Image (cartoon, rainbow, N blue to C red; front, top):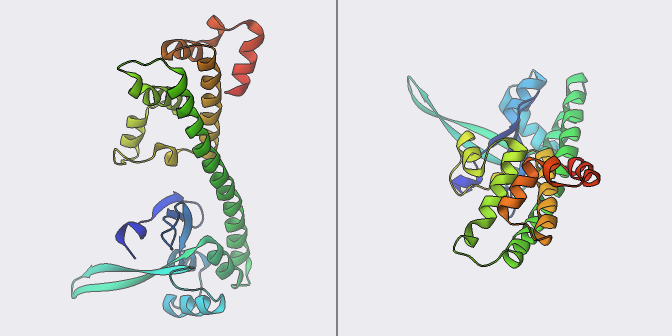
Length: 241
C-alpha cells in the first residue's frame, strides 16, 4: 500500500470512530473504514485482539487488500521499538464482524454501521451531483461573462462568495481551518447539507448570470435580496437557499 492510501481521516467519532480513506483498491476515494481494534475494544470481547480479529476475518471471508488491509504501527518502548499490526476494515465488513458477536453490543454496532452506510450513500450521490453541477457552473461563467483581464478569477470569486454564504468562510479560510494543503478540494470538507446549499446557490447564480448580472450584481442580490428582487421573487430565492 502506498503511504497516501493508508492515511485515515476521522469522519465521525461516535460510539465507534469511522474514518474516510482512499479506496483500498486505490481506484476511488471517500471509502469509509473502521479500525478493527477500536471495534473490538467497544464490543468488550473477552478474547485477546489478535485471536478475535483473525477469527472474525476468517468467518466473514474478508479478502486482504479488498475488504481490509494491515497497517503496521511503530511503537516506541523502553526496551526498543515494537510493531503493532492494525486491521483496517471496510464499513460493510465491520458490520458483519459486529453481527457475529451475537449480543446487545454487537446489535448496537451493526445498527450504527447500517445508519452510517445510509448517510454515506447519500453523501456519495450528493458529491457526484455536485461534481456534474460544478462543470455546468464553470461552463456558464466561461460563456456568459464578458472577456476581461480578471475573467480567469471569476470562478474562484463566485465559489468563495458561495462558501461564505454557506459556511461563513472562503475556500482559503476553510483549508486553513481544517489544516489542509492549498490544493485540497474544499467540497470534501462540507457536510451533505452544506453541499446541497452550495448546489442551490450555484443554481441561483446561474440564473442571475443568464439575466445579465455580473459578479458585483450577483453579490449584491445574494447579500440583500429584499433590496433588489421583486417581492414575489424574494420568497423563491429565500426558499432556494
